[in-house]
Image 1 (tube, rainbow, N blue to C red):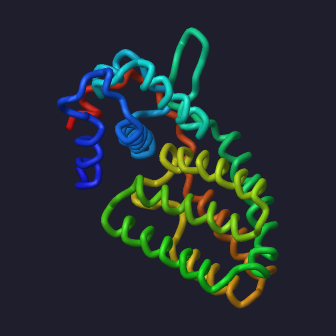
Image 2 (cartoon, rainbow, N blue to C red):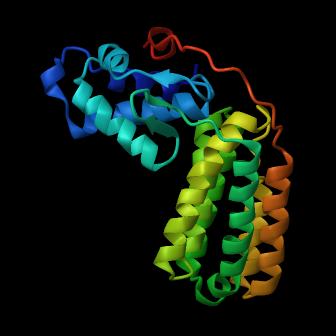
Length: 244
């Protein structure tokens, strides 16, 4: 278990605080703990997330857990169903294809405008993100690597100046993160960081059409790493998963 994960669990467990002591910082730690468990595949697709069980595990109110699950549902990591409650979203092969088709259309289409607008400062920020992603990969931080890759693509879309499309890319990347966690190769995060570096260099040179072609190749390569084998639903041991 990574040091980052251990620290996350310590924050999430909130020892010494009662259920009435819910706070924004604590909720953020619990949110991160649950989302990491989903992306790291410790909580598997279809697994039920009972509010009472999670409230007991983390020592917070069911109301607090409900808010966290609603946030995860907005990011499509969790599915909320009437009478059944919350469960880890189970993406299908068709949904995965739809997500990557949408990313091809939107992200590739944004590259010429990004190439026209990108500044030296923005390129530097993107390189720092790419470096952080490389470190996460080397250190075996699967969850962090997937998150940083999604953040890279989302921030790149923002450079286009189209806030609506950038927000859409962010949602697509969130869904891609779950797809990669579920169907990706455990030893391969999908995004090759050298692809990101080459893309930044191309954008800085103002080569928008070439950048669009690179993005297309990059997304196809990520999709090609997926293995669409669906697993049977099982009841998770929440105490064991979130043990500090």
